[in-house]
Length: 206
Image 1 (cartoon, rainbow, N blue to C red):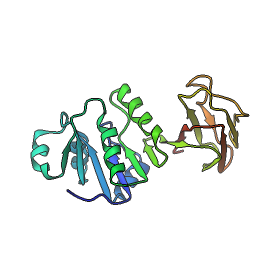
Image 2: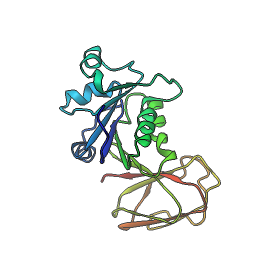
Image 3: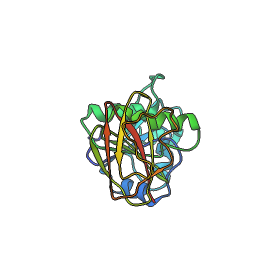
């Protein structure tokens, strides 16, 4: 079995990206993990996974046989294949991690995939329109004027203060999952101060 190296990219079983930012991240990866059926489209696009992981209900029979030496079958139905790949990577001590192909196809899979990173501070989900990652207290993030910003949390008790957003927070909570969406950066650096916990932030590519 191939030993994982940084930088690591995990390819989920959603729509394969076309935007140059996630594609560039994939091209620069030292290690690639494909989630089950994602191996088929990854190989079709000229990339070779180091590891294929999942319950093997999606990968083609041809690739399952051809790449059996790099396949790790995990039958646990309480976890989706992306979370299996994340946990495997963390056991190897690998981070940070980039995830592509996490969106598209089924909406429930998209939501589950994105919120899979809430337990981690060094994982980024890259899509064709932007990226998702978690932020914690007193964090400054790189941005650009006009960048679209959305914030999500499942903890309504978190108080948020911000600087350099079009609609700043002043020790406020996100009262609903939609309240933090459709914001915009007005500077190259955005500052956040949280009372506790973490937020999921989306930043557009353009």
